[in-house]
Image (cartoon, rainbow, N blue to C red):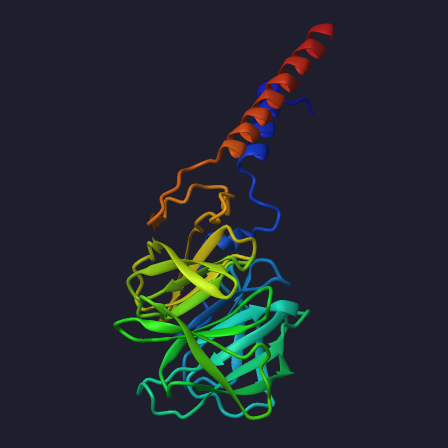
Amino acid sequence: MRLSLALIAGALLTGALVAPPAAAADGDHGFTIKDPRITESSGLAASRLHPGIYWTHNDSDDGPYIYAVDSATGKTVATVTLSGIGSPRDVEAISIGPGNQIYVGDIGDNLDGSWPYVWIYRLPEPKVLKDQTIRATQYVVKYSDGARNAESLVVHPKTGRVYIIDKKEDGGHLYEGPAQLSTSGSNVFKPVAPVDLWATDAAFSPDGTQLAVRGYLGGILYDWKDGGIKRRQRLDVPLQRQGESVTYSVDGTKLLYGSEGEQSEVTAQDAPAPAGGGSASPSSTGNASSDNTGAGLSTSSGLKVAAVVALAVGALLWLRRLRRRD
């Protein structure tokens, strides 16, 4: 079948200019959780083993379960039952650390300090997505300054260190855990920096240089360096029924925000670019309100676009010459 020259040139331009990054998945642009069992989705984590899969869990009164949701369809493709642990009390967060280890934070305390300790569960992410039971490791967690409520647990993607942000209406703190969690005794988490938000979840960028923290009505992006945070800008968190979760897409170009409720929507927005001036997203960073503003395409991106256009035009002229010879 003979294709027109315009069609060939259009295909070259379309494929070069708007094709998503190789690691991106279709569902990374947002989806609806369709599983009727998931009515209180309180945490969200992008799978690195299975592109387009997001792990979530219910809040309380559900059991030791986590769910793998296919973002392309919104359907649950695997239910994992955690064994080797006690009865979960108030599961609020999920994060994936180095080695594809899943961390589940049973850290909620709606009475704001009634539990003398909380728990973290760790399990390997399954290589095959199917309903199965996986033995988890359980860690006891205490805070150096007394019990508290928390809904945000993050694991640094490079160091594997675990952090918790407590939930306080007038702002909480980032708590740092031991360099390595231990099953022997309690793991004491210590406050290391204030967080100016009533935090309901948080997420590290895949490269570990940014920490996004969300609340019900807003969010803050922090730059991360050597275990410390520096406030960078506000995040325009979408208005949701009960905004509970946030995660980066596995390629770092999107921030996905989740909510509780039946048929809850997960909304995607472009992630802010790294502080070093690189581009975390093929789009502009217009969905963040900057304390340090940035702008659209970088110079290098513009040069790449110009090069692609020149290549396409050159191909078009070459094909025209071939047709004249025919």
